[in-house]
Image 1 (tube, rainbow, N blue to C red):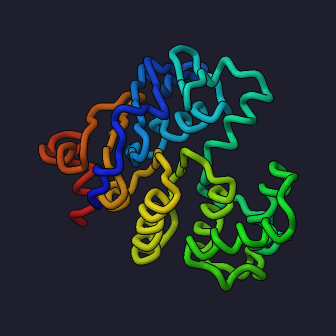
Image 2 (image 1 turned 120 degrees about the vertical axis):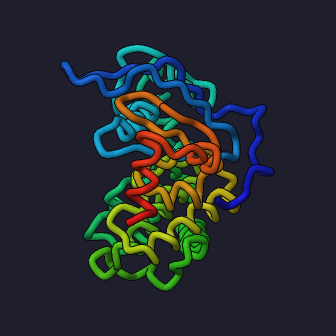
Length: 257
């Protein structure tokens, strides 16, 4: 794991979750989640498919409402916000979708410019172009500005998706399965990008994944989720020091094949 702990401000909590519960009918997805995300920190939420990881992210940005508990983001209780206030908060929280969610009919440059045009009408065309150029350089794809998404590889699409999220300079980044569907080398490059984003743009991040290599590389802390609860939290080495039960099965599946 890359050592970035000197950048983490443990006196400033940007996301605070307490006693979070969420069910869909008889399916109890979240069963008492507690989590703190500190300023400048990358926290990896690790778990198998169907354990509630993506539901947690959707509650954080107000796409779903919890049944019980509190989610405080940048000092705001998300479920208490009116629509206008929730939209304002979401501008400070970047959500990188698993699918990249690019507009197929737009070029890369147009995809990146779109959030600025929609949310910051005071920007001139020159300011928008300069901002797009800065972000494309930061994600390592400056030459793709005139390409369509159909001309990009899977890894490039993931990078552009992250770039479009970064264009509004969010304080918090939420990554949903960032390495899903990528080959090992492309996954490694994306892990490096997540670290670079934190260092260059001063973000705090929650990374949802079932990829242990991603967790080891990018996480300052790791929280392992099973059956709607965190069963182990700490640095990667602390969590996987004692490889027993579910922790051992996770480790063996990822690293001993």
